[in-house]
Image (cartoon, rainbow, N blue to C red):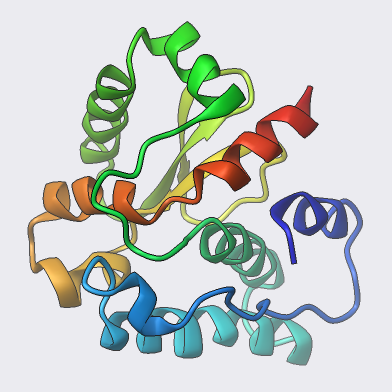
Amino acid sequence: MQPLLIQEQYKSRIKEIEINPLNYTFSEVSPVLSEDTLELHYEKLAKGYAKRYNKGEGDKDFNYAGVFLHNLLFAQYREVRDNNVPNGPIKSFIEKNYKTYSAFKQQFEEEALKIQGSGWIYLATDGKIKTIKNHEVRKDILLLVDFWEHAWILDYGSDKKEYLKQQWKIIDWNLISTLWGKSL
């Protein structure tokens, strides 16, 4: 399911939710994300939010937002590319707001490293870099990075900066560009 459709789905609460199937195999995003990390992150944690929401267990808002965020996150990944850079309208949008893609990445990484504990960081439709503490549904997300410990600890230990640097290799910029175009 495409992220724009995912966001539409969450405009009003639905009775049952699910984590969408991946558009890639675990091995296609390795070594940026290992199969062990995806097994934990996608199969157990993300699907667990949906399961608990559907059963009415735990904090319903937390589980609902967890499904929303993870569906956006996993949809934006693609196979690993070492020279993976934005193109098309999203490239122009980034350059308008940050002058260069390198400057954008640097600011994004700096803001992410300010997160104390767990959270999310994202590029918003207004061009700003924003964070989410815990889980929260937001309607302005273009590019999202999970900064909870489970997203990076197995592959990067305590090196959160390297985790962020590697994320750029698996972002599907065509999808992000499409999202940006539809947000206008």
